[in-house]
Image 1: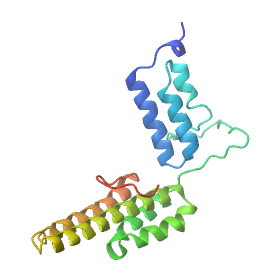
Image 2: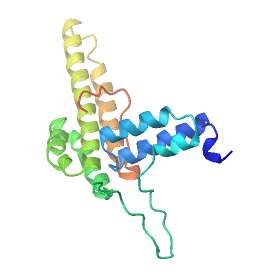
Image 3: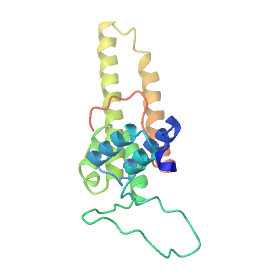
Image 4: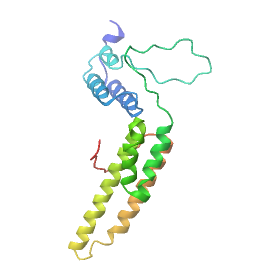
Length: 190
């Protein structure tokens, strides 16, 4: 019995899903390909099945001091997208554009720079969704304050501080790790 015939443990399957999610977040997988490979990984019974969900993918390069003697050729018709550092810098600025422009600035970035770089688009869409959620919360609180004749007006500073902190944290986390998702956000735009 070879190791490829062994059953996959939940930990191995979870790690495989995590690797696929990282590749999708880095822009190395398209949405359809990601969904197909994710479905294949989740249905895997043996290690061979799980390994098949990674077939043809280029591994993340490991830093080394020795020159590489061989690079794996890509399949015909498949292009490998390299993740460049522009995604983090532009993503950080996109999150922080929410301060002066609310959701308009991140939306413009998603429609312009987001078409050229999937990492920038991911950050811009995340920022737009958060800013739209915050805008709806401010509008809802305004309506509620009008209905209650000012009774809930004390919540405006609380909501404003939360909005400012989360917008700042979003930009900072993107600058440091390159991967950030706002909690409690309606994902209206994909």
